[in-house]
Length: 154
Image (cartoon, rainbow, N blue to C red):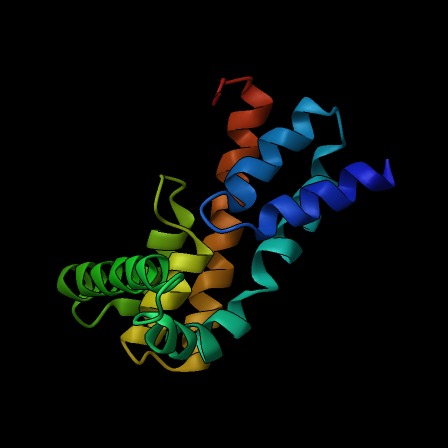
């Protein structure tokens, strides 16, 4: 069972998959929902400070490199597009917009993209992490309800 929880933890850390994939996977493995939820939240939030502090710098640095440049440019572009969309829609309500962007579990949104967007928009660290945390909690609740309702995501 420990192996299953570790896998849930690591799945929730993967960009684009995050807890949106980890919670349903945990339910496919018949793991208890509450411990799975907690582990997914921790796994999904663990990279957030690192992403906020370093991702933008690393992506800008690597964007012109031969092998990794294309992927790094794509990630930077995705973060910039997400940031611009958030800024346009939110205006002064950027905190709530980021929370909803991270919290509504649709493809292309989540803690990774939201944190990168917050970093690109120069949102302050505490607000960015708080909005992402609340968004991850919301996404986790939505995914728990969907998983418990038996809605097939695959």
